[in-house]
Image 1: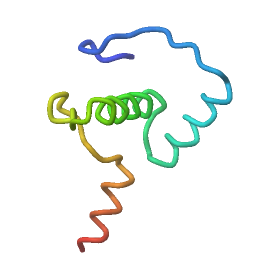
Image 2: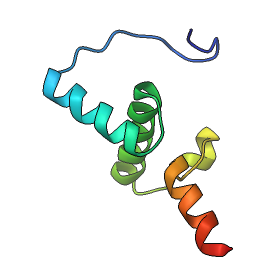
Image 3: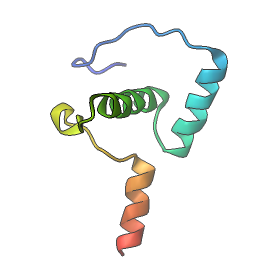
Amino acid sequence: MASPDKKAFLLRLDPALWAELERLAALELRSINGQIEYLLRQGLSQRLGVDISDRLGKDKQSPAAAASSKRKTR
């Protein structure tokens, strides 16, 4: 079920693109929806030339990247 504070909408994707999103989401320990949202935030930040994650209140790293950096600091 979608969070009440999020906008729900239908998105049609090419099956090959969906498969790549599934693969990447699994690698980065995200849901498909979370992966799409992450990629949209990342793309927006690059396009605007500013880090928008503080504005949107979300993590800057993927869960896999965060876990990796925790292992390196130990």
